[in-house]
Length: 128
Image (cartoon, rainbow, N blue to C red):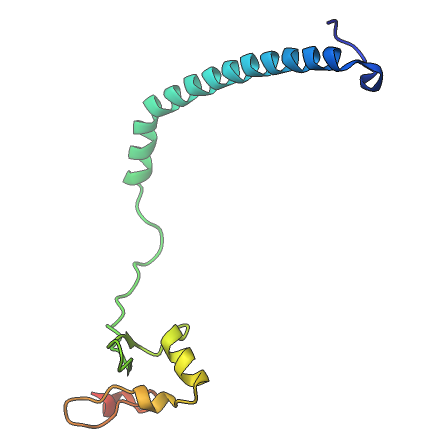
C-alpha cells in the first residue's frame, strides 16, 4: 500500500488486516535496527568506560569524612520473641500492636544486670 492519508473507517477488514501486518513488519525491522545501533554505542562506551571510572576514582572526596557514631544499645525487648528496639526511628509492629492492646512502653524496657530499668529519658551518665 502506498503511504498517505487513509480513511480507516471506510476500509474493509481484509484491508485493515493487511495494513496491520505491514505496520508490524516495518516496526519490527526498525526496532531491530535501533537495537543494533544502541548495542554498538554501548560497546563503545564500555570500552572507554575503564578510563572514565579510573579518573572518577582517583579524585579526592570533597568535604570532611563522616564522624563515627557510637553504637546504640536496645532499650525495649519483645518478651515473646526477644526482638529488640533502640527507641529510635519508627516503632516496630510488635510495639505498635502492644500499645494498641493497652500495654505501656515501660513494660518492654530492658533492665540492666543490676535490675534497674533503662529509661529513655534518663541522663546518659545514669544509664551507664
